[in-house]
Length: 470
Image (cartoon, rainbow, N blue to C red; front, side, top):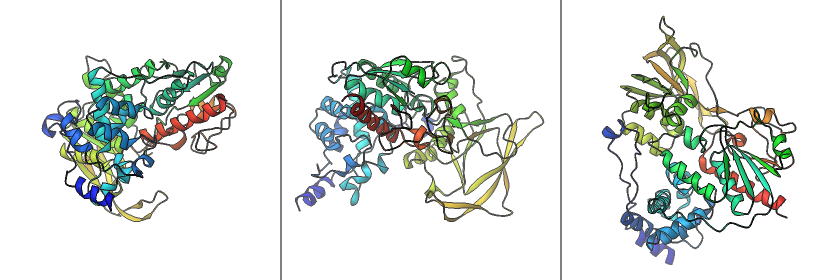
């Protein structure tokens, strides 16, 4: 009864909206779309939390953030304490507050959400992390004395950065090897500036370096050196977190025409290499006027919204199922619609059409209808005979998934992979078929969320500590 009375009282405070850039203005820039809570709004939202005795939100978080505690600290106005609480279990709170699908994780378990709107946990997480950074008072937690053990992490994406931070706090000497010229993985090359500013990622990486993590850039493990070389250099354990960045195409006629990108290339050029600021940055990108993006996930939304900001007059999402089955976050679909993206649902490309110069000029599509659910639980799309039509385009971005990066597995004898090339782990703690080699993130699961990759990093850190720390 007491919980019910508290809930009724809290429900009188509506969930606080986050201010955003106006759609007509934001499609002309790459600045962040949501603008964040003010301190007053954050306190008001935090006071909606009823501080459950058995908070389901913690169980819904893959890195087990002490959610009621940090929200209670925000409600009390102690924003720096909230940031410290977050970083007890989450090394990247400013990132997670922006890109995690809270609606399917922590907020899904919020008691207030049973009858109304859940507490805006993600927005509060972002607020606390941003407040700490803006104040210049980023705190570094106590680090255990060096224990003489060295761990190599391959890949500076969310999983690799998470395990690096956890192990550094436990006294390990951690070196992260990154193939690209900046750390962050998908956070830096895949997610656009308007959704996750690069300065945020760089600040999170700088925090890890303050913990003692060493990051070595421009180093492709499997080419410059192998996992066996790392062990020969004195590392006691290796964590493989190279992601699943190999592009996937649909193998339909015309796919080799100019103007057809994989989402990986399109977003990497724009995000990591800042091609949208050409010629200030010397990596060009096509600024299509009529752009079609094939796919319905967050990557597809990132690509189509990038195309708009690059000047597209018409930007299309072509997706073979209905909006209900679309895997992208509801917020990303909403933002795309606000910005003028045209959604061609229950539609699938069957051929790309080109001009005499070999440049894509059209996409031949076919209408689809939904049949019975497939292995993923989504209803299978079935072509409708005689329903083909053509869309005029000059640029296409294919965002239908990715494949495992094969370089590390191919150069590591005894490291088992499955038929799709992903590393096989023996348990939830990331152990592989090679002694003292662990793996996590997309190279194990296939393309998933940032927070799930981070959760894998946390579990592997615990497993390595149990093995090496005894």
